[in-house]
Length: 206
Image (cartoon, rainbow, N blue to C red; front, side, top):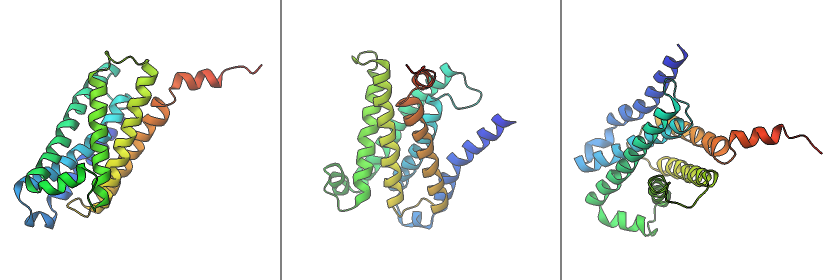
């Protein structure tokens, strides 16, 4: 029962922003590529909610091993979603994308979006090269969690500053969930692993 409720809530959180955006009146004045680009961004934001839940093994019904495997798949999908989002914007308006990538855009949301984009690519590269990087597991986990936090914050600020096709209630709701999920991983399972906390807690004072 509990697992079913969690899955239903998760599905609602992921689908509601997409469905609400599909009914936005602003879509009437947009071409197909621009619309696809925007929905790629919304889809990618939904993946940002899934990623920390999968990494932390918090999705009911999934074993830790399977959860990690799906985490890698959704990570690749996130890279594709971000790439599709930026590529679509490039096709519709190359000067705006150039200004954003060079941090010369007059719109503040562009800066946050670009920072989140590079953090996504950096996190994906770290995951792909994990076995080759000369990093201790804890160091790797902290760096990866730090990038995940940057991705979440950058994406949320980017989205909240844009007055676009996303419906306000679902946009703010998904943003809050993304920050909560990423914060839990970064603060509890990333920066301060549970084992370290327990060792500190049960250490007897001299």
